[in-house]
View 1 (spheres, rainbow, N blue to C red):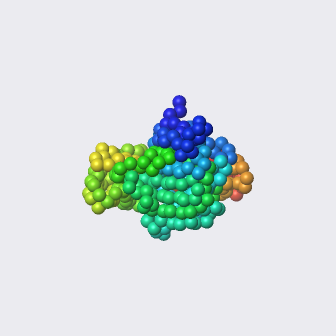
View 2 (cartoon, helix red, strand yellow):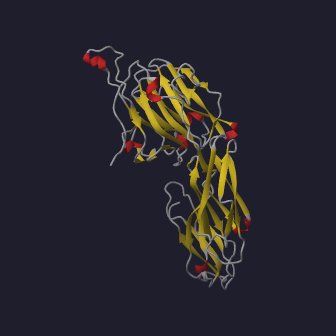
View 3 (cartoon, rainbow, N blue to C red):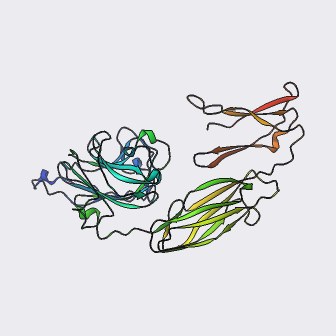
Length: 415
């Protein structure tokens, strides 16, 4: 069942003989309280059925799509339009115009807003763009990654565009960003991540969207920014001999106190394979981070190739858990069993990422004839997100293909 909280509004009353400024002020909202593609829940893709922008019942995750995903409303002509939402940027693009949002008419993104990269790739600023990717103006405030910001935007229906960060009802005459660019006939709000960054991953999120015809429709009193905590990253991999590994818990605001515990899980055994210290934390006032040390125990036991230690934030007071609230450390076992009779084996050939459509990708393992490969596995690892995504146990005995050596090929599917 679709749970989109949408009420169509902005009906032009001139059709019934009223004055042209008598627009309805009932607001249009989307709190993304559904799961799945936005295009299945009241939104549309400009040139096709792009289902890559999805909701998890709380936020819209943008990052996989190359089209503008729009929420339609009645054509506003030359009347003003306002919108507000919560913005959280997780990773930065190479070009600010690749991440953009704003109002749109039937076929054109008018003056719109996006981001520009600052701080050596650790922060960003909000920017107004005109036709093409021309920059009209840029705010001078550095915003941080993985942090919620309340954003309000405005178009006067002709050529004035404004943006506020954490606005309240007294902020209208004091925008954080202002630009001039021709605009009329607005009838939709859009989100877009450009083709160059169509990486299938969520790079930024939007929550609690509100659209209206008055500033007070979209902002109220002083904003309340929720204090949240998260891990600095969601996963990593270490070798058993690495010893100590540190992961950071981060608080988004330099005020208030947030405390909590870390619940441990995974396939690795606490005490035998690893230890964690501390297992509870407190971030007081200006303290915005805490370091958790995972000590990996290097033993001589022959264990599965990979074991995991999973840390989860729990029992929080003073704040809420944000993504990622779970951190997974994969521990690679470097203790090898005694090699089978015949001697060591090696990867002799690898077929991966063919030109065009991937098919029949394989790895060929070679070694002395008679070697039993059932004690070996092939581990596939994605260096981009630092995750093992597939482990294939081998089988079979190498035959003699000449000079006492041979090889066996194993197909591991499309990767």
